[in-house]
Amino acid sequence: MVSTAEDMASVQQHRDSAVKLEVRDVAIRYGSTTAISGINLDVRKNEIFGIIGPANAGKTSFLKALNRMNDFDNAMSVDGEILFEGTNISDVRNVYALRNRIGVVFPLPVGLPLTIYENVAFVPRLRGIRDKAELDVIVERCLTRSALWDEVKDRLDSLGSLLSGGQQQRLTIARALSQEPELLMLDEFSIAVDPVTTMRIEDVLKELKPEMSIILVTNLVQQARRLADRTAFFLDGECVEIGDTEALFTGQVEDSRTTDYIEGRFG
Amino acid sequence: MNHASGQQTGNLPDINQRNADWYIDKIVQYLVFLSGISAIILIVGIFIFVTIEGFGFLLEDFSFREFFLSPWWEPTDDDEPTYGILALMAGTASVTGLAMLVAIPFSLGSAIYVAEFATGKTRETLKVLIELLAAIPSVVWGFIGLSIMNPLIIDLFDVPVGLNILNAGVILGLMAAPIMTSICEDALKAVPDRYREAAEALGGTRWQVIYKTVLPAAKNGLLGGVLLGVGRGFGETMAVLMATGHAINMPSSVFDSVRALTATIAAELGETAVGSPHYQALFTIGIFLFTITFIINLTADLIVRGIRKS
Image 1 (cartoon, rainbow over the protein chains, first blue to last red):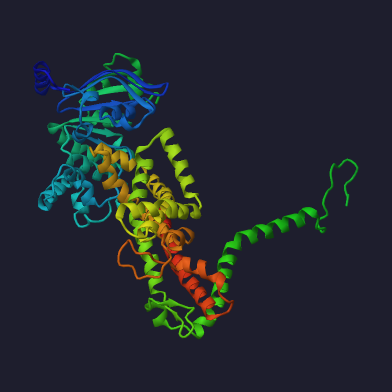
Image 2: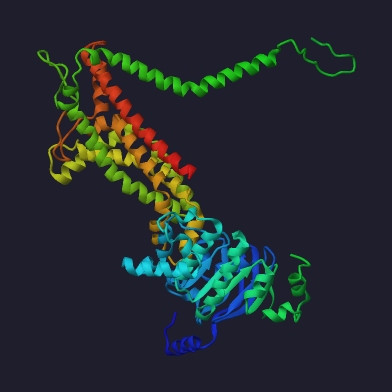
């Protein structure tokens, strides 16, 4: 909660600083099982922050904690501090507004059971936009940016769930873009997408970078190398190391396990 | 039967001899088959029985115009008996309609609470209680209508009689609500969690997520639940007999006493001469009720099946 002048000043400072998201000593537990612990990292503005690591490293749980998707999951508890623009997210008074500012793309595309048009217009409508012409503009812009417009412009009124897997994933990206998010989190978005579409989405992400911070969780280490400015390596519930992507991929590592993973010796 | 040599243990069965196991297997197969198709046999049997009993009336005294369009149900009139069920249909329809007005918001609300908001113990307890509520015998509901609702309505609205559409509608609505809640809750639970997560991630509040995503996705199941409630209301007899006042009347307000189709059969059948036109006319009402409830239930079933597939 922002109350005193001092706090206001510190928030203002954060607005100006290059850091979008700070994670301090975060641990996530499911009952008595620890999924991930001791996570400290910063995500800067206008960067793509890659997170790589084998299955069960806690990557997805970590993303869930960042927009408080754990609220409705009683089994999941989050310790430590997550600061979004300098505000601790566990103190925000309107969690829905927080989520509204953070875009999420899930591993398997989830087209809401609505038409293509309504999928993309969902968030603008939540924000109270009623004007059809205004919605039309937003829908076209978002679908164009996610490289889907040409394929669906003649059937915006058909169900989103009838699209192919790759198209649905681009639909969910269009939906996330309609939020005009300050932070976009992608959780292994290419898992159900063909290579050509994957490359198209990667191009879209590069174009988006000047406007937002992007967290890219990926199983494909080469994808992290292609896209991420900095990369974190998660393993068995801890963050092994964080570094400039190029450095990590050229062997300038602090922990040899990072190189072992990148070069495919395990995981 | 033992054809085995010395070392062999147990009896080796003769391949040309049917033994006890063989016969038991056959008998069990037939028994299970009979139980399985008994539902069909019973339904068809009942339909044939009701039709035969009402057939004489349909052939001789039945007039489509009089039966469906006359409000006069006077089968015991010595000079000129009339068999019009319009008032009875109006009674059944008005009570069922009011019952749905009570039951739909009630059951939808509790289904949404149980499926979307309640967790852990609260949820389990509520589910058990709702099932329990559905099991209360209808005569108990009728009793509540007679002894509690009746004086309450007389006091509250200052009307001479408390046994009327309002009374029966509320009683029937409360009766139908638990089963409707159960089915609607199943429909909501069948909506995959990934829809909820996706809509929540977009920043929807819980009500926005339910209203814009979950309810549209579950609409077929919800509609099926509502239709089953309608079917229940239509076919209900005892509570309606006790709470409507059982007076033949074309209703003009909810404070009018009415009489339902089902209650008419229940009250009069025991006092008619078997085979008389009156007796047969009651069975004709039975055919009519049977057809209507069959259509309602079939529609509900098809709709519910529809969601399971998609």
